[in-house]
Amino acid sequence: MYRNRTASVLSTGLRICLVGLPALAAIAWTIPEAPREASHPFRLSVADVRVADAILEVRIRFFWDDLQFAVMENTSDMDFELSETPEVDTTIQEYINEMLVFRTEGTPLAGTVIERGVEDAVRLDEVMWWYRLRYPLPASVERVHIRNRLLFNMFEDQRNLVNLKTRSGAERTYYFTWDEDNLSVPVT
Image (cartoon, rainbow, N blue to C red; front, side, top):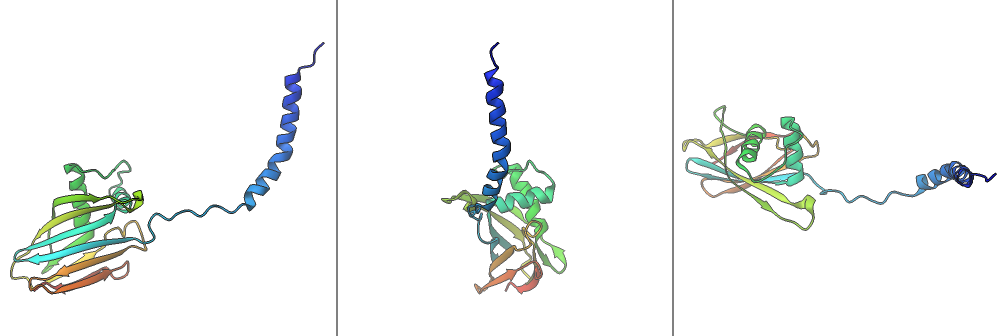
């Protein structure tokens, strides 16, 4: 007796949708995507190295997200999160000792994390984490071989700087890339 108006309305609605969807898809396809803001425009770690008597002291700065992703990839721990804890310090120490290697006479030096910190920023992706490590260095050593592959396991466009202050106070900056990741430097 009474028509099912709901069915009639749905049928009309479905017809409109079926006819209208291709047109909407075509319109959406032609709308340019809003430009995405790049996380940070460059990939860079900076290590400040100071040589004192029998110690190499290194302070390294990273963009937090680059460091977190590189450690996740290196350890295969997809749940890894940067935090200010001794457990994370140990993981970071292991990562740094594997990727930033100081050698004297062929023997790698083992760095120990002695301090860490976070430098806040307005944008989350510009927050920097830094670590200070101490490496024992025999006082008689005049040259150190450096291999710096920090974050290279994650980013082919990664660049690393090492600012070195020698025992005599001379300051030099060294640049490391994917293709040029090691060199021997004077520390006297």
